[in-house]
Image (cartoon, rainbow, N blue to C red; front, top):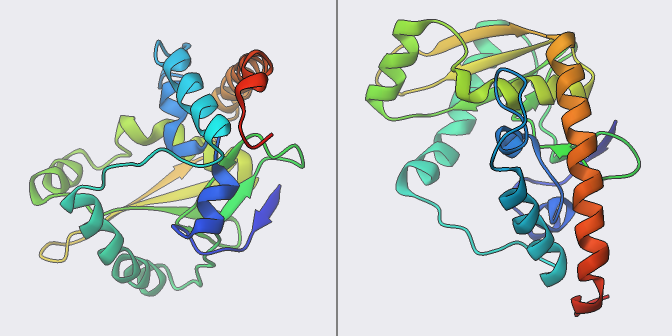
Length: 204
């Protein structure tokens, strides 16, 4: 595990994660049930495009995404008070010194970490009713535990007009083993594609 202490969203942070798979997109590599995702080849193409350009593609940020960014510090403060713990903010965490697999946690604690979502009111209500980690975030949360070497991860859904939701998720070593194997296969394929494309790289 290698921690890069930069602010998320900055040019340095974008450069550090450019062209490599990151936890928020691991659902494009492995499904929640442990099968290979049908989106993997498209994700490889996207990452190879970033690698060729030497920077990320322009990405659209919706009003809800912007709202989430604005509310995240408030949600983190709630979590620290409710959990009576200090959250350490980090920029990027690499799996190892190869720097080919990474995640960007919303915070690290002594034995775990934190994933914050600030959804719309109706989505937050659905999370309150379900009282469990939404399936769509299983890959991201388990990946963060794998990469950051943690035993648990807390999922927080935060809406300023309603009670927040906090769910503790334990490490699933069997699923993480499947994920590690899928990521290793993915990275091998990605590097093979890079080799084929290397002559087109302008900043090589």
